Amino acid sequence: MKVGVLALQGDVREHISALVACGVYPTPVRRRQELDAVQALVIPGGESTTIAHLAQLFDLMEPVRNRIARGMPVFGSCAGMILLAENILGAKAGQKGFGGLDISVRRNAFGRQVDSFESEIPFADGSRELVRAVFIRAPWVEKIGQGIEVLAEIDSHPVAVRSRSILATSFHPELTGDHRIHSYFIEEVARTALQEVQ
Ligand code: GLN
Picture 1 (cartoon, rainbow, N blue to C red):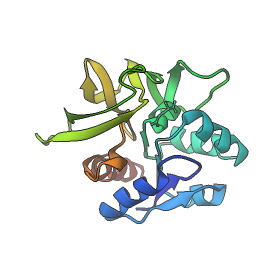
Picture 2 (spheres, protein in one colour):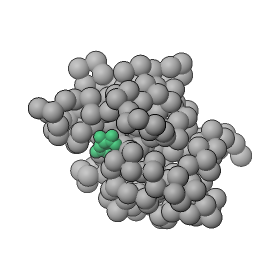
Picture 3 (cartoon, protein in one colour):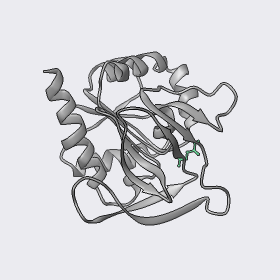
Picture 4 (cartoon, rainbow, N blue to C red):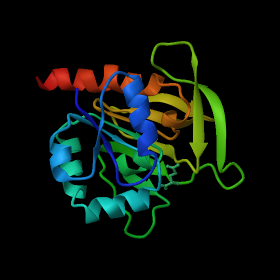
C-alpha cells in the first residue's frame, strides 16, 4: 500500500518513522503528483492554520479535499483532526480545512492550564491494552454526525473517532513509540477501505 504523509508542516518525520515501523514505506506529499501516487494519506499534528495556508500555496487544498471525498483512507492527528473536521469551533477567521469527517471539533479545547498532558486511555480496537496518548494544545470533538464511531474519549469528550475511511485522533500517537494507532489505521481502516473499492 502506498501511504503518503502530508509534508507541509508539523511532525512529518515522526509519522514516517511510525509507518515504517508498521511495515509500509511512506512518501512525503508536497506536490500534486505525489498525492496522485498514494493510496492513503496521513495528516500530521502541527498547526492547522499553517498547514491549511501551505496547502493553499502548494495547490493541494482542493486535490486533497477531493481525494478524501472520493474515499481515500486518511488519518489525521491533532491539527490533522482539525483539518478533517467539517466544522471547526474556535477557528481563526477564514480558517478552512479539508473536511470529510462529520464532526465539530474545538481547537485548543483543554484550556491553558492543561495545555499539554499525557494519559493512558482505552482505545476501542478490540485490545484491552491502554494506549499512551500525548495531548499538545489538543482539540476535542464536541459533536459527532451519523456514522461516526468514537474510539476513545476523555471526560466524555471523544478524542479518537472514525468514519469508514477516515481516522482522527486529538492526540499524537506518532510521538510515543507505540505504533498501535498507526497499525490500526493501516490494517483496519485503510486496507478495508481499499478492498471495498477494488
Ligand atoms: N492547536 C493546534 C491547531 O489548532 C493543534 C496542536 C497540535 O497539532 N499539537 O492546529
